Image (cartoon, rainbow, N blue to C red; front, side, top):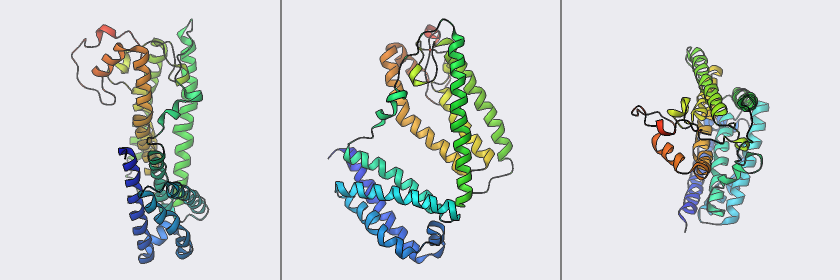
Length: 315
């Protein structure tokens, strides 16, 4: 058996045990029942959930492929249904979060069992496929395009989604208290992270003959500005911005959203991006990757990147 398939089956085994434990807690503890089911009749829910979630997860752990699909599909259905119920009634918020997490885990485990891998290459298909930008006579065109992208992506990922998450967290009753200085701290961190993001974008678009968008990537490997210290300054900026907005909105769920985004970027997007950079820039990128860290800057001797500091980086 492939190791990744074993990991998928192990996940479903854990999910079966966790599901059974949760149902025991639901019938034993009124607090757990109220937090996860609200005023729903636990007996009526258990009639469907125990066979389709607990028992199907157990069968999936033994490699029954049909059970993998049943457990995953039911988990996703329950997560959506609970989210609608909690949004309308302001009850069962912790049940939504639990089943949402279970849905994500089940989908990953399903891919491991049925495909033997998580198909992260699907991320870069269609409009997100890696393609070099069309060479322009003036860098100003790339700068304008880059700032258009910033307005769109920052507006969606750093305004629309966080506000929606904070609203839902309030409706679901899953908020946690924040200290009084969280808001001002978040504003200060947001300003600094945004400055890093803008600096990185300008350097990339002026020195790289391209934009941050995968479909219009830079044509030169830039190792200038913040790219001299970390390979992914725009990703760092975006993640820190998300966490800062969570502090401003005083929503731990928004901070968790930023943390999950960092994991998705690091383990799904970054390997594909670095593979593309290695293919296009060869030894030059390999030397850069070996010299400059991905996330955390490290001290280097002056001039250690001098030999190729006039290039570009798309990270």
